Image (cartoon, rainbow, N blue to C red; front, side, top):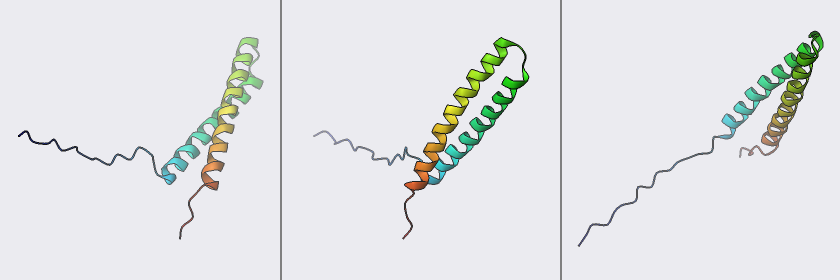
Length: 84
């Protein structure tokens, strides 16, 4: 009689803990906020139309990403599990 194969049950936790997710979202938010501010400053400093348009578009993109990360941070703070 053949032996039954044992299925190895490994507990793979793909979801990061709430603290790790919050720290990751916070670091990315700060990064994209700084990139947004730098792009805004470079938009006003450059005199070339091409560079001004490029930095303007990149400022808009970085601003939208920063706003999305801010919303994620707010959601993570609101849904934080309460300690008992």
